[in-house]
Figure 1 (cartoon, rainbow, N blue to C red):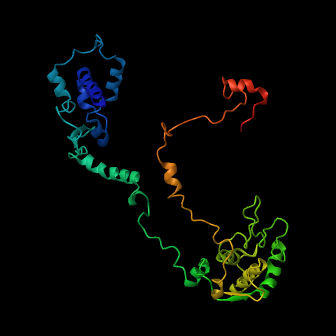
Figure 2: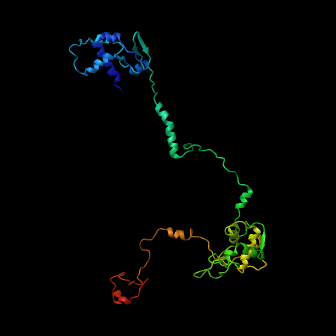
Figure 3: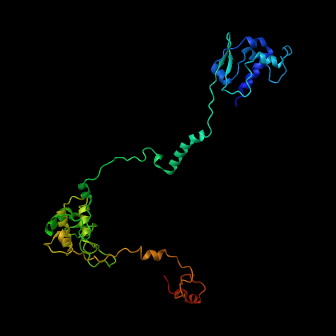
Amino acid sequence: MSRFPEIALSFALAAAMLTPAAAQDTAIPVDPAEAAQADVTVAPPEVASDLAETPAGDEPAPDAPAAAEPAEAVDAAPDVAPTPGASAASDTTVQQEGAGEIPVEAEPETVAEPGADQADAEPAAEDGEAAETGTASAYPGAGMVHQLGREALPEEVAAWDTDVRPDGQGLPEGSGDVETGETLFADYCASCHGDFAEGVDNWPKLAGGMDTLDREDPLKTVGSYWPYLSTAWDYVHRSMPFGSAQILTPDETYAMVAYILYSNDLVDDDFVLNRETFAEVELPNVDGFIEDDRDTVELPEFTKEACMENCKETVEITRRATILDVTPGSPDDADAGDDAPMMD
């Protein structure tokens, strides 16, 4: 709390004691707003200069007049002493030169009602909670429905719905024969896969490889490895020719797949592939794949609690290793020396 009112009051009392006439007859014009904030009457400049030369607590100069009685000091400056318990909200009297005392009303002090601060702080707390929990009010525009885009048209959905199932579901209308497919294959595919689907350089071979899946280096082609014809049709229609995918019409796709079947000796040269004949073609490796049942067969075995002791009824050593000192202390190993068999 500021001590300015107390200091100014001391100056005023000292001025009354030193020069009572000057204190009564002379006053400096004071801005009412400043006086209201200070709640005191400002002492004249000459009195303030005299007081500044005398340190606080020192005895007054010998030639100074004797201090007046407390009652006279109060009478000399009745507008100085504030009423006990008065605050900034009480009226303040300012004395101006050539005028009487002018009452100045200080700005009333606002007293907060009990619980007001807590009520004002509650919305901020709610906002903070919303930010932490990520609720709809935590960011601008939350909860609004943004009207972006539109529903896809039927023809747009159909353009993406091109998958074909093993039973032929999803196949479009159309047909193609082996002879037409040979011409198309030469135009679009032979540069990579060869004229007879035998493959060029390291490009994939699409024909051959029958009965090679059990070898160390099996040849996996449409005829030897792929289980369903739908995979061949879907792949050609969706991804071929390389670099210009999806330019083939359904009829062209039927014809090219028919030629690939012919190259694998699976159909005759007059074969026509369409939705009806599609189901008649069965690839040789259709039974070469098994259902992935690891979640029901292997997973329970791998996730059960491991055995840590007495896992077998009997434990016996069937063979011994003789590499360096893997099994030290064995008399048989010592006798065998360098001629002992090596164990992997």
